[in-house]
Every structure is written in structure tokens, then in C-alpha cells.
Length: 169
Image (cartoon, rainbow, N blue to C red):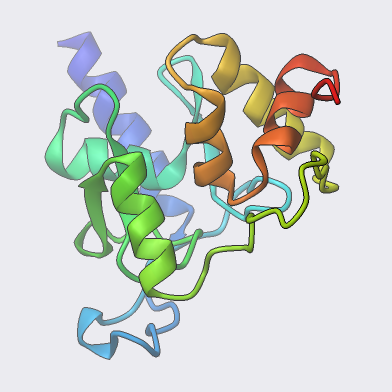
């Protein structure tokens, strides 16, 4: 019984930090308002972040867990609204890295990562983003290419962040 009380209390505390009358996505007004996280957010990406059950989690993932339960291994929780602070369960859907990449391309949110020459290109990213990349890579669950697609940066930048080294010339 204590576990359930703790979980319910965590959920109550989570929803207290959510503004449920946020912006309405211009590209999909039928979704209705975003529920925007008002707590801590990641550096350049702007995703809400909170410690949940002892681990730092993105808040949109926490929202999915509260509303729908399980997230299958290897699946991402994606936004229909493209608002990284949004935790409205109705604005979220599960997808793979490919689904996320295709969604970014379809909506014109993908950074140009194509290289015209053979030299590796390193882009500047924040320290927080580099730490996120390094942490995810060290879990062994993500390949460099998957992280490059996830963060929409060249694979050389992911390699540099994950290993603290440049790709060999």
C-alpha cells in the first residue's frame, strides 16, 4: 500500500508543475492546448526533465508512463505538437528513431546533416547536450547514428561528444 501512496504522491507533485492551458500548435490546432512543463528543462533541447523513481527522465516520458504505462524497449515518446515542454498525453505517441527522423523531415524540423566533403564536421552543442549524448551512448542501447538522428547533428559531433575525441581523418 505504501508503494501506491508514493506513486500517487509523485503523480500529484508532477501534475502541479504542469500548466494545462498552454499554446495550441499552429500546424495541428485540432490537438488543443499543450500542457507545458513549468519545472526544470534541458539546455538547448528544451525538454522538461525530472527525477522520477530515482532516475532523471524527460517529463513527456513520465507523462506517458502515468497515462498509458509501459514504454517498450527501444521506443521513443514523440510529440505530435512539436513542443518539447508539452506533457499532454493526447499530444504524445510512441515511435522508433526512424519514426522520429521521418516526422522531423516531414515537418521541416531536421537540421542539414549532409556533408558535401569527406572531412568530419563538428557542430557546437551545449555541455548538457554533450553529457546527455555521452550518457545515452554509454548505456550501450544506442548507436552513434541513432543519436545523430535523435539530436539532428552530424555523426562526427555525436562521436566527439560520446568519446571526447574527434573522428580520425
